[in-house]
Image (cartoon, rainbow, N blue to C red; front, side):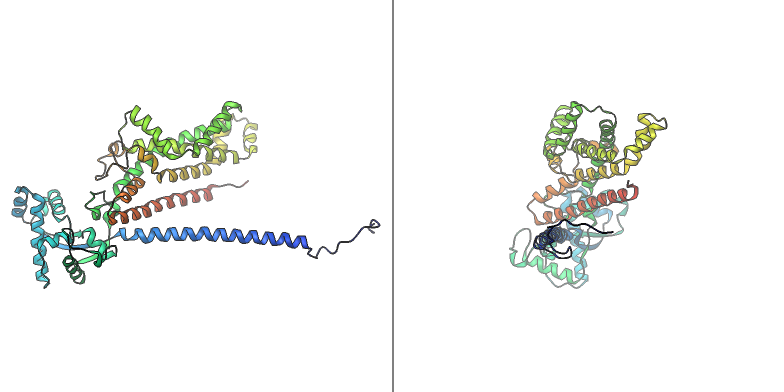
Length: 440
């Protein structure tokens, strides 16, 4: 076989030879790859810095310097304390006497007074009073109390408060720090895991050591239940109708455009809508998780509808045609064949929408969940939805707004707990997608 060539055709060289234009193009591609790698490394470095900052600032909230004291309160002392006008003060005096005798038995030579004990170990009277009122059967028996140190003493041991920055006041003196150091050396003050931060409730501004995020976790969980049981069926039903049954005309086009626009609306706008519709018009209780769940449902619906429609579109048309070809109705084809195949994507979109709603703070500002201090757990199932409560983002915002550095530390710790929840939900979404996803 011979190949004919045109006379006069010029040969530009071998294909294996790299000319100048190819070198320029290859250089541009190499630079683009380098730019991409730099962008990825920059993003990862910012993520590492953010994670390190959150963990470094929030981990101290999970530990607390505790004083372990064994106390035996007799029925006579209990009756005498309850009979006095200032009951909390009476319990403080009982604790001071017991703690002083224990220090003397340990041979502590430092001179101190009862006020020093109260400045080092705060709220002893309220703690003892609450315990023995709820457990009168423990009167006359030795009880071991693990009492947190005052926020300033705790900050001193954690490095938030430096000795050179301390001036003698009614809250703390340099002599108190000397006594605290001796108690630390004697093993009476120990750093322990702070379960109160995870299981406790919020406290007043003068008791940051007793503040916890447990009640706010319950409020967030109640809101997420409302969002799940409302947004999932409504969003899936709307998506199925728009994608499978609705006629393609200008009205459905208008609805689709509005759904896409609602997904980009700032979340605080939904808070204003919830304030007007659910509180001012429907007269639902302010700061209730039910109202917060309804507001977050409105915010989450566009995300779920868009992700559900994308999942339905990903199912090949041949599935629908095959079902219709063997005699199935339109509804049977959708619910028996299309919907099960699209369910992994639907669940993934729902979980991502719930994770987005879990971290929202702006809508909760408008319905009053930030202004409410969650100091008690709900009394039952109905009260978990209808009684005023807080949520994790709102609680974190409240702590960050307070002036005490101990509350600021609690806010960072709350961010860690919130990030753990968000990370768990996103991991669940990835597992569901990997487990049930089908590639066509």
